[in-house]
Structure formats: structure tokens, C-alpha cells
Length: 405
Image (cartoon, rainbow, N blue to C red; front, side):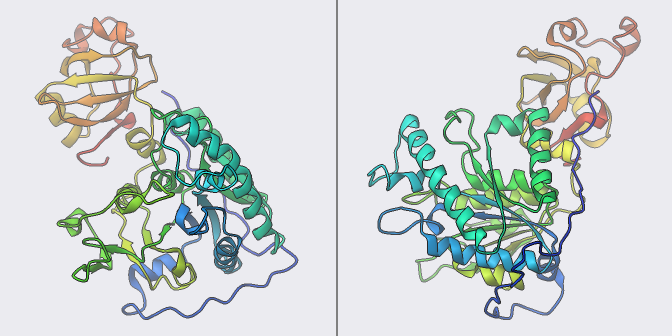
């Protein structure tokens, strides 16, 4: 088996490196319950991923990059870094930033148009982030990712190592989806999901999702009957919540933020969802917005990757006995419990595991290619030739949705 995907737990210097070490003093936040608890944990987080939506980075009148908005966000990020945290920025806005220079009044709907706008906008966006952080003598590094980069383990490791090295060199990583080459079939879908995956990739202690809404409501916040939800401890707290889609220049919307928040919490990362206007409070005392509590027991980096990021090349259908064994018994998947295979896969590939009623159980790293496995189906291990008696998917390389194990 291949070694597990490492988490890259590099301990980085937390003292400011810039000659100008002045921290911006944010305004005090409102009180939000007693000291301690989950919000105190957010305040103490050392590795922080901050995602900023397109609408928070562009001018409302012409969709061009707004230097003042970026400066205000940079000021708050600088304050958090001076206070001792390591920050990674996931920045939307490339397509929106390219619309103005190209004379577009509406976000393109075709793939080529989006990629053209992104190719122009990425230049403008990177320049503005560099200019803004340059006021504090900080260097930024642009990291453009596609879903394929996260889906293939070797490329995911390379992305992780790049992020780690940028932080070791005391540069601020600015991450965005590489819209200029991503196809409609191979996209993260929105930068909220990308931020959740980057947070796990970096071993973050906190993910902050910023948009133009100050938190989660059970319906459109413009509705006077809308109820603010300060904390989400589990999926039950989302019963009855109606979340909308994206806006004029973005693709995220509240639905994608909630989905990304729940994804991050499955990996053991708490999430703070609020508006970019309240970034100073969010990054100082975490007294604003909606907090999503992390699940107990953080998934290993490999199992999180296998469940939520990996490219799947095939499917194994299993019987009821095998389903019970792998979901509740912590057992490896053996050939005797497999009833059918689909797709062309090789040893070491990630395959989806499906139960007898068609339910997706989980994913795992298969030990045999599809042709070899075809002759093993339903056979007891003792009846298989020597060299083919290993588990089809070893328990250490099997991650299931039922238990998140």
C-alpha cells in the first residue's frame, strides 16, 4: 500500500518578520456569551484559512477589484498574523475581476468566457493582494488549484508541500481555483468547497468563510421573520433552513457555504461564517457570525482525502454481510463479500464501495486491478491462489461514510 497522505504539521515561526510590525487594532466586538467555549477556541487557533467571496473584493458598480476592500481585509489578516497565527487566504474574484477590464457587464455563462475573464482577472487580483500585503512588507504567493490537483494524491501532496514551504518562507499563500484550465466536469464548483479542502490539506485549526451576509439564517435574511442561527452543533440544527445560491458576480451562495462548513467540520475543523464587513471581529474575538462545531475525532488526512477529494476510478458492489463488517466491524473488505465490479481500475486506485441496495458506503484503496479482481469475486480467501489472499481493500485504507472512520 502507498503511505498515508501526510498532514505536513510544520511548526512555523509566529513572530512578524516584516520590519514594520505594526498591528492594525480592530474595533471591539460585541459580547457573545461567556468567555471560553467554542469561540475562545477560534480565537486561539494558530493555523487559519480565510476564504473571501467575490462580492467582498469587487466594486459594486463595475465588478472591478476594489483596492480599499482588499486593504481593509489585509489589515485584519495582518493583525491576526501579528498576534501569532499562520494565515492562508482563499480568494475568489478572478472571473469578476476580469469582467471590468474586458468590458463585460454580466458574468459569462459559457466555459470559454469564464476562463477568458479569469485569465485577465487573476493578474489584477494577484497584483492587488501583493500591493496590499506589501504595505506590511509581506510577500504573497499565488497558488492556483484544480479539482484534479486535489483528486490525485501525488498532486495533492505537491500542493500541500507548496503551501507549507510558502509559510516556512513567511509568504502569505493566496489560493484560488485555476479557472483558466479547469473544465466544467473537473471543478471544485465554488471556492467554499476549495477552502474546506485547503483547510484540511494545511492542517488548519479554523476555517473562516466570509461573504456579504453576517451569518446563517433559517431563510433569506431580508425577510423580517428570518431567524439568526448563532451555532450549528450538528446536522439537526439545519432542519428547516433554506439557503440560497450565488449572486451577480459569485457562484457560492449560502447553500455552498453551509455545505463547505459541514465538510470542514467532518474533518474536525471548526468554521466561522460571517460577513467580510465583520472580518476584524471575526479574527480577534470571534464574537460575530455563526459557528459550526467540529465533529469529535478528526479524520486522518488520508481518509478525509479518500472520502471527499480523491478521484474515483471504479466501483465495488458488496453484499449485506460485507457491508456490516466494513461499516460496523472495522474489518477489511475481502473478495468473498464483493458481488460485482464496475470501471477499469488499477492497484492503488480509489474505488467507491456500494451496498446491496445501491447505497454508497465509502471509498477505499483497492489492492488489485479490475481484471484480476474479476476472477476473485465471491471466493473465500483460503480458496484463492497464493499472492491473491490479501484483502481487496485493507481496513487501514478504507474510509466509510457511515462511521466517518
